[in-house]
Length: 155
Image 1 (cartoon, helix red, strand yellow):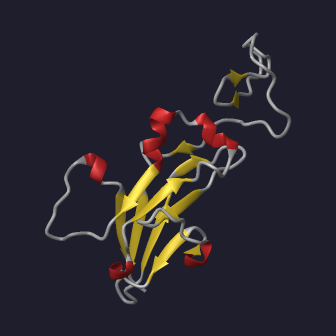
Image 2 (cartoon, one colour; image 1 turned 30 degrees about the horizontal axis):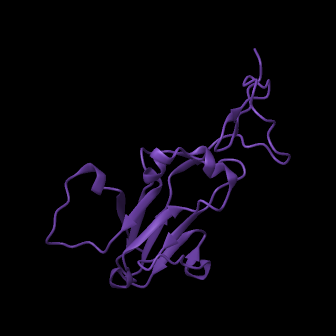
């Protein structure tokens, strides 16, 4: 059995045994072992609310593999700017309260790694998770709207 190591690019997929005869050789550097992989059908947010302190933690990502080289997930604000890492603790966004939460998106940073080129354009919408402050008068029941898992924490 031949070892198959895939190299991804926008133009072609390569294997170690060069099974695509007309394909150009991959560029030097670390091989791309494959695309990042989600553990769930789409990117999810986890919301934890500490009832005593009133703080809320939003964690983005349910990935089983970050790809090689690894990709990054980033938080986007409503104006499309990226939230800087000073607001994060180990990738988790900590907010003083639910009231501080603007409409946020956690997205795959397409410039973070060449491994993002392994994700087909038709699947990139699965790599976006939105958080909007819950509207208690509105009940969402469609599965595509249920991308936030919630837990409460007591300290």
